[in-house]
Figure 1 (cartoon, chains in turn blue, cyan):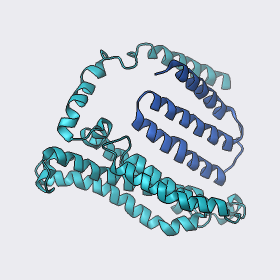
Figure 2 (cartoon, rainbow over the protein chains, first blue to last red):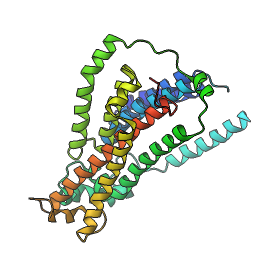
Figure 3 (cartoon, rainbow over the protein chains, first blue to last red):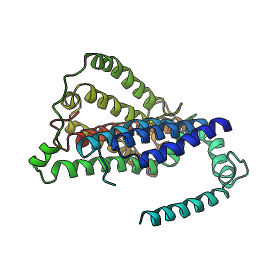
Figure 4 (cartoon, each protein chain N blue to C red):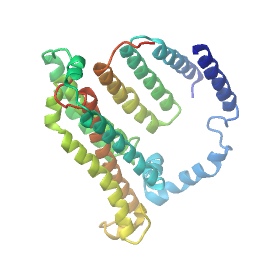
Length: 81
Length: 251
């Protein structure tokens, strides 16, 4: 573990988490949560959990973002609250 | 209401952070999980199963039940989404209102890139599945990559193109088949007089293996089953979601 790298990823994690909750445009929120998953994957890989990082990259950053975008396409892009 | 919710979340967060102080340090050799269970796996896995990747050995062998029902969770999720979207009340007016804008002509550059990319992706996915007990990876990750290659096909061309390669019916069949492969390997062990998913009994029917290599080979079989289920169910979920269950138009 390199603490500078850790700190950078963790700060970015908090920022992306807040942004994906606060942003009004749901498509942007889906994209930002994809970025969150990618950062999470970097963190797993850096902690030595390569299997988990692999799954996170494939499922979290890859497919679940696609699923969310597919759902947004079929429902609405603007949130009401 | 929002202030109340924020206070609730804040208090819970503070409690979580305070609890995290009690965790053992990262990589602490004297913490409870590292002293008993992990040590057992590290010392015995290669001798018991001839699998170098301990994570795969734990997932597919020592905790085989867990992975089997994890796979069935994916399977049930796919079935549930298919059931809700394709057999629910059909309302053509609503479907038209939500419909996509008329789809643009496929882009030549994107389609050519996709044609070059998909074989490599699928080959890599097969490598991830087949090599899962020697390097990071396994049935779940490989299945997801395979599903992603079909979704890429659907994004670059259109839904019908992807469905002509892997139809919805075939996807559901493969999803069933994968889970049946997993449970079937477990049941063969029962038929050979061992416990459910006790792979070492399989050396009686696998040629040229002892009871250690039988566990390694059975893990490969189980990973293939997981790969089948994950690939076909995730692709099925995508097609159902993107076409609102009609499987007619969509990305």
